[in-house]
Length: 320
Image (cartoon, one colour):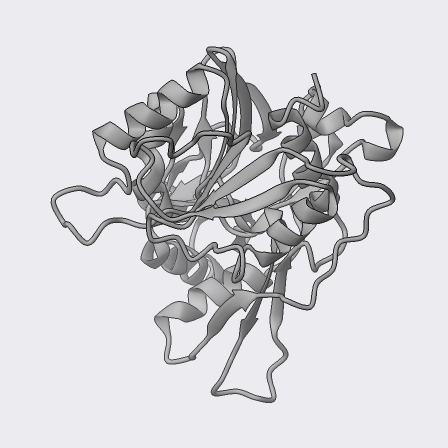
């Protein structure tokens, strides 16, 4: 079940509705700390989608993810085109799609049209591996059509934990909320994951054969958007009845924030939060006296770095 860890990321998100200016960037000073590399040389090719409006670029917000994977021996490239283009996924071991954006075309919410979704699913079915990470609104709406092709339902809102007179979207998954799966167990005891922390995301439900890597607690909820999340916190802190506020402004969360499963000959991991795989900083340009907020691999009290490594090891077949 999920547990409270802190308030900072949700507080930053809620500040988005105020006059407080903020800048969210990749933490380019963060450095991986690995005892050994999984691949000594010429490791599997990982291609990170940068062709569908995502801000999670390998030289920006996902720079720490790219650095971690390179340190582990993977080859990292950006993908800037369509996935149904000829040879778009040739030679790729793992395709990473993190927080795609809604297209400028207002006629659809999905970042991917039917042709691209079919191309990705066919590639996975024939043996490719997909990591799809899409967190809080509006990212779920942009990714849900692709997720649905693999049998995954996205909550598309803000998953949170009620806490008496408040709520937090900073979720902690202790050992009892983690699956019995190679991604959690690793290759030996030194790689076992005991706690995972996420930094404001959505909830998920998977196909029947999916393993729930990160299990939501039975009382977890999901608000449809940021405005509802702000209102929930404000009303709870004002002393209103929790059951009334939650019933009016939220719904029960779906059972997971992380899933792993096979799809044909391929493998898929879907996460309802993208920040846990990288390191980011939120700065406040109008408030030089205010300390930056860090989120992801540059924070402590979790095994997110090992979790990121293990899930990539499973997707690249280093783990059974």
